[in-house]
Image (cartoon, rainbow, N blue to C red):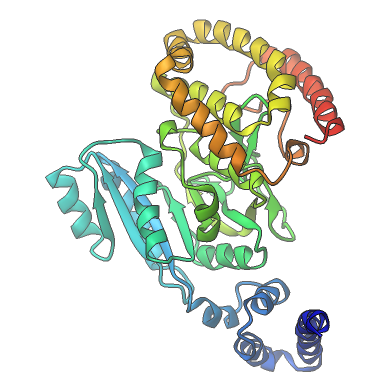
Length: 421
């Protein structure tokens, strides 16, 4: 009897869905909104409502009633004069969100001063302010707010850069995409450049198999209509909706990363743990993105990409890709000398070779591998064998490094898949 009952319940739910669809087809357009309201309110089953998100489209007025019982928070991180430069348009876009969702705003003020605290309290009186005396990095700043939200039972957390702004329906579309895919742990908005709003900042981020991360289709024109959310290797932290239940499983940002690649590591862990990362094309945000050429950036990027690979790859993958990694390190050394940031490259190596950091590196790998539900051969198709750094374009990269490493990656994937690891 228990077996029959287990089969009967999902069958009845789908019959109900089919009946609802037939009614939608038979009624006039004038009455569609009323029936859609009925669809959402008739059945309290969350799975059914998730199917409704798939079938009806997320922008309809009916979904607003569905979202009323959700608890959603937005995290903004400030540092020094960042808020004075960017907060006003960002906050204006949050206040103008076209949805029944009333998100709570959390602002984390790193290296907080009396002046910055007063400014934030006046500019954003509705926000909950978290102040940090020191600047302990972008990763920890976001974590400080996310910990509070997880303790208070928030369903979703939106990480948003202060130099980004949301389209009126962006949050509605992000949540609808999440509700239509219960495995989605991270949902990135389609990021467009600001003020060049017809050009792409990121439609998801790609991971090169040697740890580099980059924006997909940066500065290309967006002129197509995607049918729905698409899988991505990892989301940009500039505008990403995170599922709280997934964060409770995999943890928050790795604070040792401090800045750069922390979103890559988080996305990688989500895939390992059986979740997915997607980009919702109907959720649009605008980002005042600039490629920073500060020397310190290269230290964090070089160090953190190697940590991410060390933490997340299986032992077999590390073994297979190590020769390519070693060759890339030699190449990056020459490139850093020519580009003037060799000291930062040496500093990254020094961190990894310092015995004082080995306890963290070993524990981080152990904790990450303990999450594993998905083997590498299922995740590697999301990765790339080519590096597309639009700001760092060089003939040697295009015509020598990319073809060689792409071929190596193709063979490496075959080896990993052969061993089912």
